[in-house]
Length: 131
Image (spheres, helix red, strand yellow):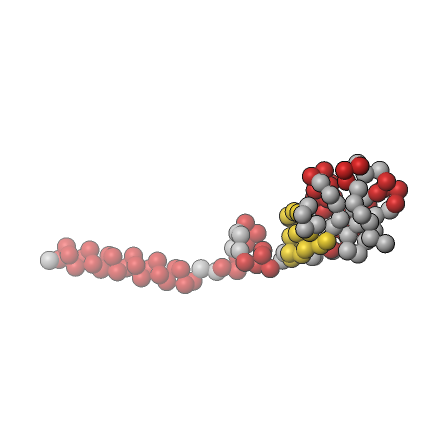
């Protein structure tokens, strides 16, 4: 009977001791940069932009031009002509991304590509330009 009492007391001491340690642990000193939390999601923005183009070559060029520092995802759909971006607005602005796309020959909602750059696109990439 004495042995059972000692085991129960020992178990209670372990349980209560670990519980009190968990409550005293200072979480403010934890390195949160290695965690994938909802805070990371809050620092990104998803935006859809109209970008004119025609083919898979356009898709590769548009997506490549879009992937600047701060952009984590860029997908262009040739059917809808919509570019879906996921980016960190503290690192890059939507206008900066659209300017990069226009610089490689593709018109966006806000920026028109330079005529000389557009003229250098492959024949399959030429789209009906807005005026």
